Length: 264
Image (cartoon, rainbow, N blue to C red):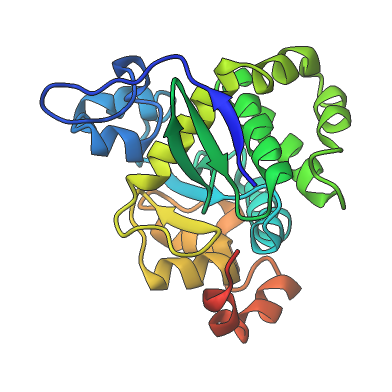
């Protein structure tokens, strides 16, 4: 089943077709890279980390209702963020889209999501949440954690957002409008710009790079991966990090082959 959402405009620059307005080119590393403006976007992508070492940027390309995405976010990403949130060691970039597809239809787009229309709805809500919080992980990540821990993430969105002190009315209006469509479209472009291309979900990048080793390390022990990648002085939170998230890391280590065969 496909859901039609209207989109405001379609943009292609003369030198490179980015399919998005220049105002959005610096929103993610993937889009900046596709549009050939990554160096010019460095200050905007990392505005608050002018320290002795850059943070490790963890990119998470995921789907709202994907079981593997839910496990990674709730059992690995969020606990790692809690440990490192005050250290400046890690920066998170989340892109809710995954294996969704979009097809141009008249003046709009049809989105089809891997886990059905409800997942498209959830992905758009989470894209609007990111936008509403100005992509501030301290504001949006606890909400996404709250949603994804729920048996029904989409139904839990209003309660999770309201409890966080954010404006549900604004986010819901975004999700029901062309603004939400634009944000979903932008997430799709960022996902399509990945190199290598996304083949499973969640798709993890470190500083814009994806390898099988990074993927495997991220899903088994993200804390150790981030701490070992960070080039600055290690904070106390990085001490004794080998399999530092505990039981989840131990459970996942033996099931990587199954994970990589997962459809997300």
